[in-house]
Length: 374
Ligand code: NAD
Image (cartoon, rainbow, N blue to C red; front, side):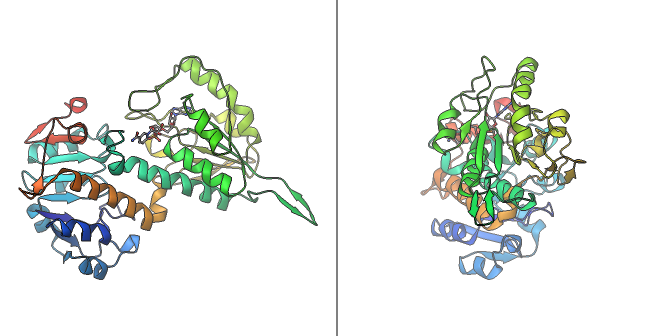
């Protein structure tokens, strides 16, 4: 089997789908690996490191795309490259499948098995392949650093001869993977942290990190069997907003991470709530790529509200720690390949009845095979 890792097509993307360490582990399985020249430079992995790990460095991207049995990358491929892939090959990446029906059609027409990293099931067995989690974790961490750097205050309490500085107040809205890491990071930096999520099961986790869970009674909320939040009714959203306005007004940093799997993010922080926040405070909207939780947040922009907060809407904050986000993504890809590797036939076992494989394979054998996208 031949694996090819092309350079990412989106210029702002700094991650790479496979780091040298994983190349070495895949080589040990008897897999040939080719990487496009300079593939890891933006995440600080050199071509020479890839060569040492056993990869072949190639410059002719178009030819390689047509030859490889498996192509892996972080972001979805550009449309024009899907047709170049070899029929019968496998393509692994984030695909944004809920918004990319044309791309899915193209994979199907090309006879390629398209694996969507977003669709890896949230099960214990699949955790090692779960790139949504591995990346969200780092985004949550970096959101706090970003906010701290833009804030005109310090986070911890300081008692000095010149006086006492009160700790900054951080409010985390949405306590999934990213939110938990944001809470933990803000706590480590000494902030006073509060958090809210519509899934009541989260309360205990928030408390165990030493943060305060904000209680807002919204009635029935719950979660899906995959652990994702259910969409709130307009009345529930309004109750939530009223309950949060005061906490936002007291906070120095608000970090929003609330997402709804496969749907646009809920708008939680209204214009009024933004206007009620302190001058010099900071909001980081981690849901900005799926529409945003904050009214007024803009993708890849910082918006300064007059006499109010600064709203930071940078997408994929995990890009800023590309060494580790690549290392984690790469481990997810390696674990996927290794899990389905058939030692005898020296290829990946494509068993659509397998919970994991069938859960994340969108197209196979010239057809759209995933129930949600048929
Ligand atoms: P996500 O990125 O889809 O959403 C982030 C958080 O926003 C979630 O906690 C969600 O409940 C919350 N949210 C949605 N609407 C909200 C609203 N209106 N107000 C406040 N919060 C709102 O979620 P995620 O981080 O991908 O993870 C969701 C859950 O899945 C977590 O409990 C996580 O522990 C679990 N999980 C399980 C596994 C596994 O078992 N293998 C792997 C990863 C995650």
